[in-house]
Image 1 (cartoon, helix red, strand yellow):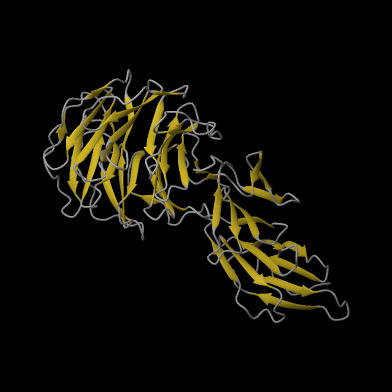
Image 2 (spheres, helix red, strand yellow):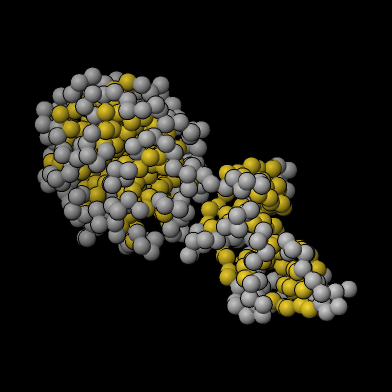
Length: 471
């Protein structure tokens, strides 16, 4: 008989070699019992939790033991140290009691399930223990297991369902509603996204994990986000009519929101020098802001007769392009706010997205009419024939950093990559999203494409092959 706990024992586990038993109890402790020698059963008490311990698990190699508690924390103990004198490593993030734990077969990952209805995958090899959160259950997570090959995780819940997950993924999960926009940081190492859940999230591109806590402050869906050219700031525009600026390192909001628009903000973009910010709105105006003084640089740019869906500065900062639900593309002088020439006309339906080529000589636009058009910036005339292939509205377009290709995202759930000179598709459509694609972005180094979808996820693609990146 193993005596020592002073309250009910909730969970037990044998080590893979059968020589050690671990127990977790309502007395807040974990006990490690050496049962290999039946004549001298010893136990070591681990007193690191602040509440009842409801789950324990061994790694397959027997080196590590994990414990989960009602204090919402997970502790990992290295059993290779005989005296267990090294303080356990703490994994924190769950907002409810830990109910179940399981190690991957290669000992590199730990998966946890909680009262908070989420499953978390912890990368134990990374220096700061990257975590990926899996949303989908509507009840407590009651049971978890890795597949023998380590490729899949199955979870059971009080919501009466089991979910099968990839332990590696081609998606970034975190938003709880549609993802409206994505943008890369200038160094291509981070990705920022915004969502119908009113939050902004910053992701580590290499690991697919969140680099910061969610940026919260908007009170309605966030439609647009953008990094500043030096990567220090993030701008966001929301249906709450506000433009907000955030510190990209801390996630803290910088000052008060920029008021002025009288309806939802659909698009934001920094000037190349980072000193100004442009925004487009459902109020049919384009506004230009001084980032330092937080005041409008001049009167609103007026001319569109319907929602302004997309805005962007030219690479030299002299011009602003806007695309509208009125079916036109307009060019503006960024310094004076005056219209340059006549509207670019040709689309048969609302214009959803506009972007300059890297050299500023071309503008690309996407539309509800399912086509993509390329325009000569100086003349406003269409260049070549429209790019056709999407079977539903084109929601987003962007040039590659070298200007040789164009990427588009559509409500037909695909991402397509086009040769900017010939208008031909470079490879087969990139499929995988289960909802319309609302935003696409090219990494500044030209190696990656990101897409954001109505299916609540973000996907990252190899820009040279079209293959999905597994994270």
